[in-house]
Image 1 (cartoon, helix red, strand yellow):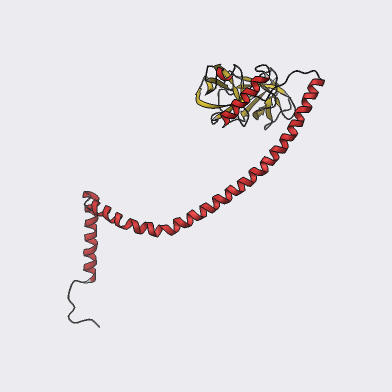
Image 2: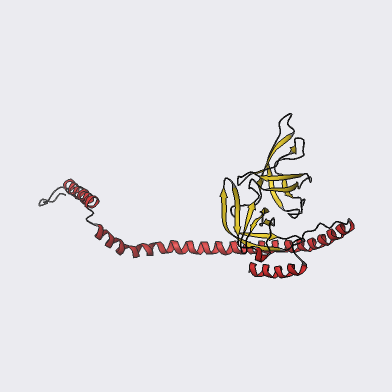
Length: 292
């Protein structure tokens, strides 16, 4: 039943007034920024409510992340314990193999032997341009570093020392165009020489016979020839092997196994011609201090 004494504007008129007033306020705020202080005050007033409303979700997420992190750490700790057990077992076998290798070398009257003296060094800077690829390390002549000294990381061969200062040295990387290193194919002992190409991810393997037993994925390791690099360290993986009919040599390229531009810590290696037993024990102590 409609009231008799109803007075005032209609609903449609009131709605139109409200919409028009809202549009005016919107334009005034966007053009003149009249309500900036009011908006800031309202945001400050409402922010505690937002924090309270968001608290349950954040608490739930924090609990979930904590549980996942604890589980991940627990699983990783168990895996590390297993890996440590395998490494200890391998170390026992390695000691026996070293002893056997020594006896065989004495039997064959072979004097070529590389020690296990090594020293941790830190990369100070990287120099890379179209003409040279080098690293600067924080070890020098005072630490016994010498020209041509092999340098590796946890993945494989990085390069060799090219300049020696008193406290710093430069390492010429294996990808440098002037670098070469004797290698052998781990699968079948084919020997070759790997040359740097000047590119970070490519090495050249020249003078490979077109009928050589090589294939993509073969691992190249140091051969020990030349007496500079110890034998058996990974160098590169063959990524391209191709030959054309009638060609004397195949086209072979490889990729370094070491991430040369991402290494922070490296290992300097010595051979028997560069130190005595007393120097070895002294340097092993300095290595432990450096590692700590």
